[in-house]
Length: 313
Image (cartoon, rainbow, N blue to C red; front, side):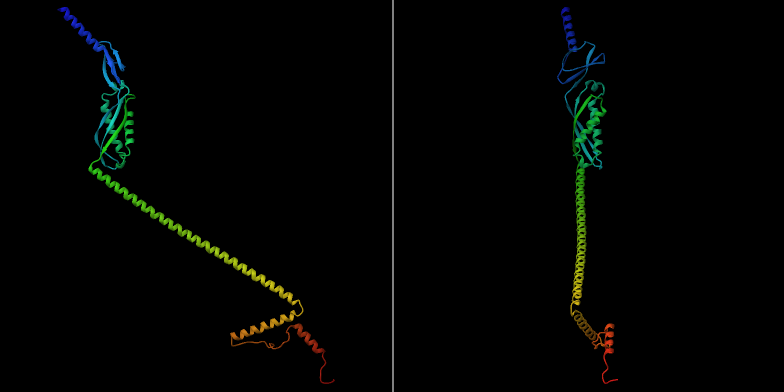
């Protein structure tokens, strides 16, 4: 009887030793083994045997990617509007040793860091940009955890933020959108009026320039016409004088010239008589003799040569 009890005890002890020393690690898992309370090694998926009563498994980590909810919180945007923001955080352990000894609860630490980062990033943007900046917010959350954690301890794969707005927030967004629409309408109207004024001024400028160019060209054309007329008159006058000179050199030309001058002389006196009541006439107007000194001298000389009539001396 005692032998049977001893055998049972031995078998029980063997089973306990085997249970404590033979370890099967599942796929995508990592176990931290300590040797007398000190880190010894990290064992991966498979069958492993530990030293009894000396080595033990202290921590067990899953290497799979896991999702954690970021609790909903109230954030204030840059334009002082309150929004309720929550999110989803995806994590994966990269270094089981650092995840075990570097921090006591990395899940809680990441959740708190994500919340503070979300509040900080939401406070940097306006309300109407909260939906547009999700990718930037996610990137900042990942970078914030990367800067804080020990290298290789865990990795933040991605974040997805879900934003919800209250009734007063919706009213504020509606007012903001209305104000933005009115602002854009005012800007467009002012720009249209400015462009119209610029176009009118440009048209007036072009009109004045065209008118001045037309006046300039008109004056140039008139001056050229007057110059051409003066040149034509001078040419005709010169040609007439040349013909008159040629006519005077022909027989009878001088007598014809005198007759023409006498006719003009009489005609001018006739016009003078019509213009006024008083008319001064020269004493020898009816005298057909030539008043030139040479002719008078020649006439006197001829008189001296003629004999006196009436009898003998």
